Amino acid sequence: MLPTLPDESVTLIYIDPPFNTGRQQKRHETSSVRSEPGTAGTVGFKGQSYERIRGALKRYDDAFDDYWAFLEPRLVEAWRLLADDGTLYLHLDYREAHYAKVLLDAIFGRDSFLNELIWAYDYGAKSRSRWPTKHDTILVYVKNPKRYYFDSDAVDREPYMAPGLVTAEKAERGKLPTDVWWHTIVSPTGKEKTGYPTQKPIGVLRRIIQASSREGDLVLDFFAGSGTTGAVAAALGRRFTLIDQNPEALSVMQKRLDGLPVEWRSAPPVEGTTP
Image (tube, rainbow, N blue to C red; front, side, top):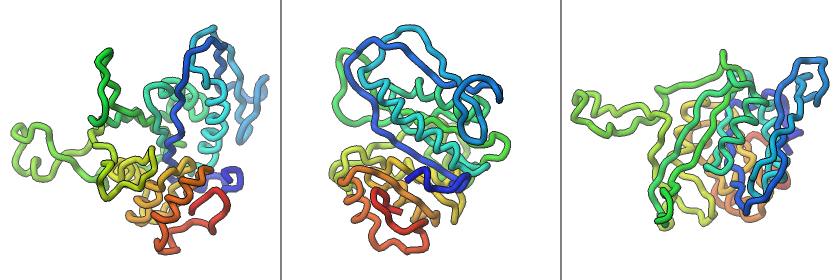
């Protein structure tokens, strides 16, 4: 599906791919870095050359090779699809975020790195043998660091943690979010819950879509899961394309998004997608 979409047609891409977990094993690391045009290496989109760099023998989880072989070409596609003012949000956890940062630096360029967002929550079991892991990482990259779209005024404000330290007017208005987002997960008994196991909260997607897209812009999510990206995009007046290969996800999205105005749908339905 992704290769059929036109170049530079999307303003915002949010993806929440499966997290990579597994037992430890040894492997040789390889990574992609940009090289000068005309030099040896792999030629990618728009003639950009990439070199495969072999690193030291290290320990990674057992799915590392397959995981990045799976994810890397999709991130390259994301770069191709983003408009010149577009933004990518890649949602991962602590296991892979640092590797993804290096890979995205190679694909987008280090100057295109905008933020590392930390989504912190406090729900579920807590380890007593280490500090409990209660956050995800969202890496934010822009297509063109000189032209990307970002509107902080459009984002819903949040309460001050110490309202007594600011004026009453500021406390009433609330503050702009920082790069650390305290937001609960989807409640297992709440109205927002669809039953999809990795569903992300509306509040997190709302903040992303408000900041990095305008009304009428096209939003893409190609690990769409429960369809939260599409539901929020439609509520905010954005067009959207959702892609997922999991039949359960497609069923949940179809039920959740059925009845939305057709003008927000960016393309006719095709197998494996919900537009």
